[in-house]
Image 1 (cartoon, rainbow, N blue to C red):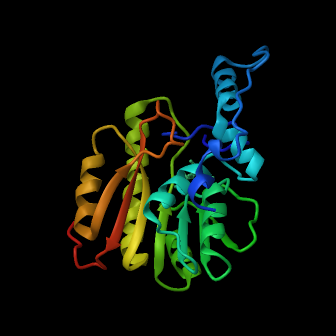
Image 2 (image 1 turned 90 degrees about the horizontal axis):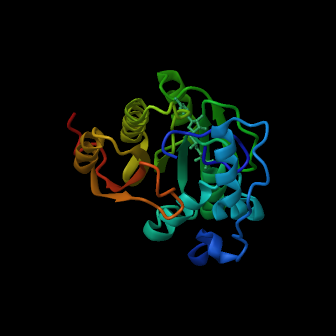
Image 3 (image 1 turned 120 degrees about the horizontal axis):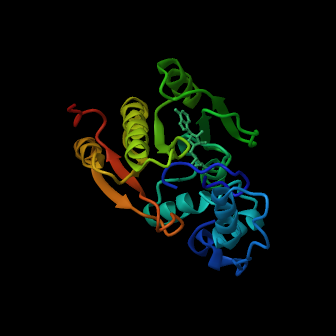
Length: 246
Ligand SMILES: C[S@@+](CC[C@H](N)C(=O)[O-])C[C@H]1O[C@@H](n2cnc3c(N)ncnc32)[C@H](O)[C@@H]1O
């Protein structure tokens, strides 16, 4: 799990100097004192969390997850979160990306956050609970946007199974579903940022995105753990359906 405060791992994984632990110099590492009474995997997870400067920085800056830094770093580079933007955040819990979207889009923006699990409220965001794979849940998200989205974000990932091939297929199925949603929800010129997991089938999604968007980049933000197969596709300049070919 990429959250700073929860023990579940998921498959895969201001602007400028605001996007990393170096920014405040608080990224000190700490060592776990004892793993007594814990399973080996949860002890390893805890040790990694304590040694991770992004976890410490997320806590220091009030972000609900270290994942917030991934979005900050991608937006610092591509600038898709603008003041007043209408944003859908799919797979949003515990809410780090939502916090970043709220900060960057400001009070005139609209942020709709959806997750399978319940999320604590965040002022200014519309939070929906449901399984994104269900059509009626997608319909609720589209209605909550209240108009065409400027940006669709998807960090959706099921809990890691430990089986790389299954994790890859499940994450890519969610990524495909996010793309399908974006095709219906985005305004022409809009942006889709979607999490993928390397493992063989990501090329198919990439080809489809290339037809639907003017530009598509593979991005591995610094905050994405180097040992994870996670990557993000940042697709900008939605063609508005003209490039659709399934
Ligand atoms: C890596 S976490 C997202 C972290 C988030 N971006 C943040 O900044 O805090 C992935 C999320 O995807 C959600 N998820 C997985 N499958 C889903 C589905 N079918 N529908 C909705 N959410 C889903 C999980 O519940 C989990 O909260």
